[in-house]
Length: 479
Ligand code: AMP
Ligand code: ZN
Image (cartoon, rainbow, N blue to C red; front, side, top):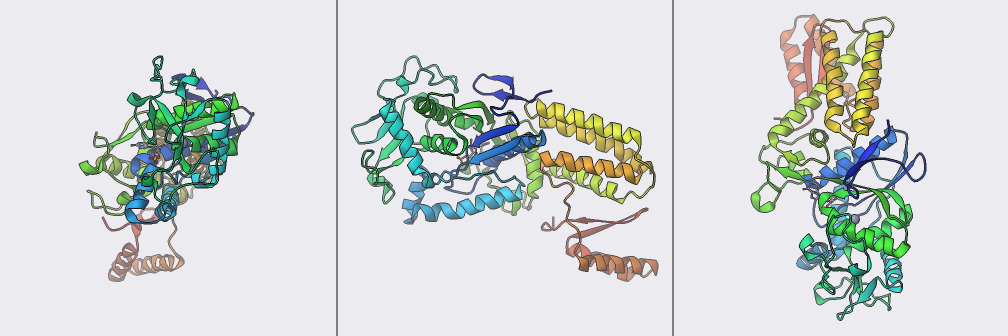
């Protein structure tokens, strides 16, 4: 079976065939660092991580670029309001962004170019567009892209633009479908921009680049003029990605990206997230207790929420959904711990090997089908249920358990839930566990209870089972 992706360009699932066999080059629109990224943004970033991880799992060498938009209208506004430089606004948010990616176990892309470090590339591209007659200068000195010169304009967004409003222009970086119009490539300096401008390009004039040109310039810089996959959230389809196509293909004369994949939006309790509605959460709000549940959540439970629905469906985030995700994740981790404790001797059991093989097939078939995570996770849970039944009746040997653990590790290369990387007690805590066992052997229940309480206060939760003591590490704040 081949991988199939839903391509926004054709609105169909298409077989994925990379330009160079065995290699994938993909561009993922990154954060605008005017603030902390919210849980909607991370839905898209985790989808892109899943895409990357699955392509790697299927044997492709992946080169991923994610830009950092560190110059843009909102950033400039914030810098002006605070009376600081653009960099002073963006730098802390860039650091925070990488910390958040780490929390969500998002793999690092190969390149994270910042827009401000690629202005030269953007200028070169704008010059090409001017030379080819796709761009023009307006009365105020700004340079605009003339969408009427690009017959395919609107194709990605499925907008019919027979009646392009000749000469209508938008200067701001973000706008709606109602405003289909020529867009700014280079914005002539405006007093609103304060100290933010580039004045070393006399042919363009004192000014700054528009938002859309940055992704065309940076993708080409790192991936070449024609590459495999371009992604973002659905709000990027228009105008941003449509404009990227127009700029890039007009300048180069070749097709830009072959596959366009877009993640649907996350909503909270059925509504669009908005600060005014009090349902707007950054990742930081959820992993600290700064949220209506009053709890600090495990970021990997949030990652599980993302994986639990298909990336092209709207994701309705709720705290009860998050609680369910947490318990599903706990179920998978307990399964790993239980498999680790099996000591029964004997060769691997053929039916366990068959179960693993069948589950892998289901997992791959689901993921090949446009990254369908819900059936992929269902396959994994069916295996867990089946094996748990055997564990309860003591019918699983250590060799089979090893096979299962290897399989979970394999699948987790795609899921990224750190299922097999569970934290171990420190040597000091191991010593306390051993002392408690010793106390129990001597029926010194008072000491045993005291040690259990001490371990619990450090986040090491003990459970006594017929097979011996089990521990679980939970270093989150108390519930
Ligand atoms: P921004 O930082 O605004 O440039 O957005 C970063 C990424 O998050 C882009 O790919 C957006 O399409 C995506 N995005 C924005 N809002 C949401 C949302 N509510 N759900 C999912 N993705 C979103
Ligand atoms: Zn972009």
